[in-house]
Image 1 (cartoon, rainbow, N blue to C red):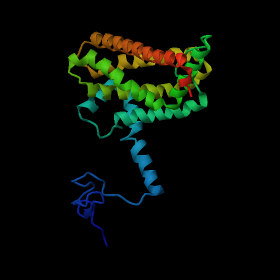
Image 2 (image 1 turned 180 degrees about the vertical axis):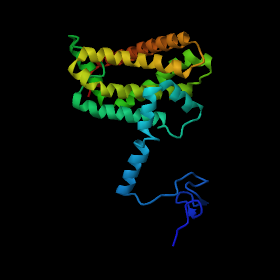
Image 3 (image 1 turned 135 degrees about the horizontal axis):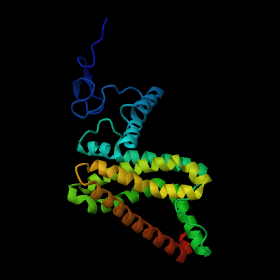
Length: 254
């Protein structure tokens, strides 16, 4: 005896109670196939959520590695079904980096001994905090760099939220490259430092001209470079203020 296909079988949504035909509820959008949460559920989520070749984080990484600006532009324009969401992508990359970095223990702030006890203790404390809370750090960076780039590129019609999307994807890609470069940073610290500082600029001058493909390439590249320099100086200033405060008030360091 044959069973009716999902398109013909009447299904009662377990989320909202709506009765519908097909693979997804036409009221709330929930998948019709909502079975028990067990090992099969976990396998399905890993395969079709994070690692599905046509929809998920591997697909998004592949597209960003080959055509970052074009990929992000198409996402902003509405072609979003196959892509991992920007903030989720950034957080997953940051989480992977933080986990792997536990084995290498590289510093977030490449500052050597200053000779001043309180300053050295403060730098060490900030480095430890950033290593333990790297996801928070990249999330705090995102609004800042997005605001700088919003100011530099608003003449081309890009709003602040769109800049958040652009920079979430670029920052996520940069974090993944940092992850790949961890062995270099660990064994060849100077080379790793140069690569780590050059990578975001190279990504920005690669991605932004692709995103603004109808504009002058020179105009886009110089705005991308100057924007990053301003962002970097502001970030270093903020970190310096934090380190100075901790040096002045060592009791703040637990």
